[in-house]
Length: 516
Image 1 (tube, rainbow, N blue to C red):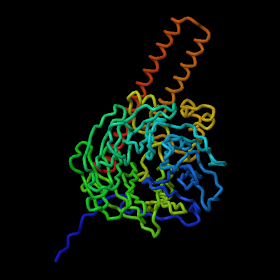
Image 2 (image 1 turned 30 degrees about the vertical axis):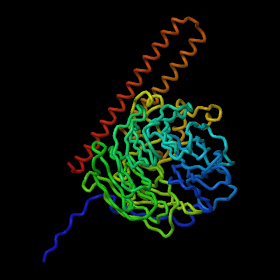
Image 3 (image 1 turned 120 degrees about the vertical axis):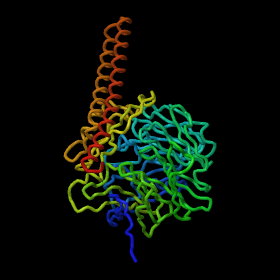
Image 4 (image 1 turned 90 degrees about the vertical axis):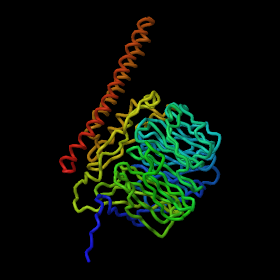
């Protein structure tokens, strides 16, 4: 009798190892909110951990430095400016001190957390966004455009805001006939995907307000669903079958007639919350009330979604926070970190890929999205799209101080992009992440453009004050507009060329590695 040896799929992530941190590194006595809403209840970035907590009257969330461990005193200050329970919180991807919160009081508030954390209760938001007629449960910052925030409420309406001006810029009122379960941006922020109580998956252009694609009955079950865009434009959904089995499905947006892959897991009642890492193309599934975290790798090879492993513990999770890649410990080959919410505790869980070498493992850490936005809010509103500006994690990453540290209180507008260079530069030192080679030119061009724009506008204002001649002012305005248009066009060209350089560098690396 002969045995054929099965072919094992090659992947550097087949042996991802999950381990909870020791008790002394956990955060204790955190009264995690009991609100009946299927959100993670936690948000994490390289500086802070935020957790929605119980509050007597109104709504509140706790914010502590990411290095915090041990017991949280019950008198510790919280962000407590909402009149009803908080349902969702999200850190701004372009400033680690800015966080948005959505509440049952029908408002969305944007807060600036001081470096080092709170020293007193915070009740006054920098910006309050009012427009929803029912409670607001979904927040999503634009991945590449500065100060663009999407909100969705139980009024079945999606709003897109320019937070810097506190203005509503787009409203999608007729796209969803029922309760919206989740909303997610694609990689460059040109489209969103949504799932709704009518069981349909929609791909929407938020600027035109048009539904680009619809797929009815993504999952047959009646329980809530979730959807997330992947880096290559595909969509991954979680939901329930007709027999109440939890499912994971992968969809190609070019053809939504049939899923590329479907995997059934178990018959638990908890909604599966997907957390996606675009750098490794891995999906982590956390179910509320579950004691496990499942993780999968998405590839171009059939069956496309490959189960890797699961982390299991004795205690069920109330929610979970997913740390952005800039915050992981590259020296320990940590590729992801969760902050698992217990009833009264926050427990970090590290996902690592064991390696013998102490050197930086470049194959585990491709350049990742940095904090510098690719576009200003007005650029995106005008129709521009751009991929994220990337940074290298070689040597680790040091989070810079807030870009708007001294400007928010005196200026109700959140945006002060002209001062961003100083804030970003303050955090650059030994071990700080540097822009990747393919994006350094784009970042430089953007910075120069903003500096020149500010200089031209200053000169124009000075001319108006000293010379009242209307013809001269008109000519200067025309020249200024022409110069600004040329600079914006140049920035767009540079971004496009950098994408081409990225592609060529990857192809060259594959040739050198013998993959082609």
